[in-house]
Length: 271
Image (cartoon, rainbow, N blue to C red):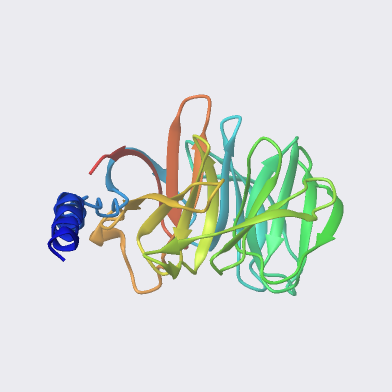
């Protein structure tokens, strides 16, 4: 009996250190890892570098700059047009009215062709740059709002959170991205411009431009243009900010609005 008890005590003595080590291991607190807070996209403000007259009757829906001229698409049924505008004077050099059935929308210049959307007619137009001669039409689903391009594709907005990339020859959808702000769909994406490889987009009914990553749809930043048009130049008939153009050769950014009397060149001031 004593021999059995001694053997039992010997076994217990062997097991105790291992149990203690196991308990100690279980009681060690896991290291606390701080999760960084999501980075808030920056909001830039602006400095006016220059300004020129802009036709206050132009309900601006699309705006581009090329070869010292602005090309503009204006909206409203019965008042829609495609225009060539002298950049220094704001004088309309050439204008092609659209059929009253069409509400002109986004505009871009790709491979020497002007491409113009319409709002709810599901039809777009392709023109010769020099004579404004209509060369062809194309169709698309949904509404047409803004239009720009990168090196390969046309880029189109339709008022939703979705931006489409279109084949410039067939106008078929190549891919899409979706834009979210704090997890919520960002809608009312309007006039578009490709600037430094980012998509700049007016947000309808606001004074803000959003900068979008064309690969992912992520919001890279905002541009707050509140106060751009002086109060002295405002009237009840004026509409919201709309119209972004970029001079790639001289790195100049231009903006205006629907029925605004002025077109501005601005520089961005980081947050």
